[in-house]
Length: 348
Image (cartoon, rainbow, N blue to C red; front, side):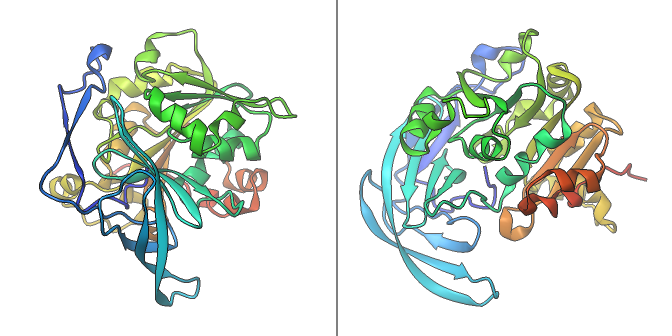
């Protein structure tokens, strides 16, 4: 999920039937959706090079309309553009309000009341998203041989990238919403990843609650990508040190977690009131990274994506890798970005 692209006029109001609790998996993720009668306009942002877009009418499945967008060109000159979008499907599941939108250049998966972008597909064959999904493709270079899990598969953007770069990878993608998985097969080519590559790599899709699966000690991974959100925020369970210790137990020796920690929540800034003099301590603005530091003392690294690429915080467990070696093992697109990882420095 890209936390930058939230809706300012959401069509739907979501409310939990109960607060998710780690102690009761049966209560986790029970969400109900109710229509809002207070607005008929939806605003969301086309990702990355385009900023500040607005849908001027309520999206109906298969409808086509004109999307007014304000774009940023590569030379930083701003220009006004018009682009048509088409809603390919709009359906409510038990867990999500699923909206898949087409523009001439991209296909996007939007979920929940924020209508944040959860998956992205470029139609021109471009694979890199210029956002946090790209970073996940760097993980296999620094972990031992073994299966890799994605907790929060969504439309499969990260899985596409990881199998493209590492075609022998054995991926296990966890997603709680079976309807979402079926839509991803229809519209995002997920079913192609479920076929073995020439190098032997494959995606095995598991429909279920990834966090409740932690009770199964038989599943061990060389790496776990964690991209779990609800309502535009990291799942509440991931604010609990105990959850991270359970996740640590699912790794084989020298395995690692790579985590999308979202952006800076307003409450974090209010509670902390920290004026960060050093960029090395900017991670304190993110509550999820702070919890991870407790769970992995001295064994956590972090980075923040640029503002134009979502501004998400990412975390990596284990000792800080040799950045020069790591950079040499990944595609050119990632070689510069991996050098930006830094250890979570102790606060003085």
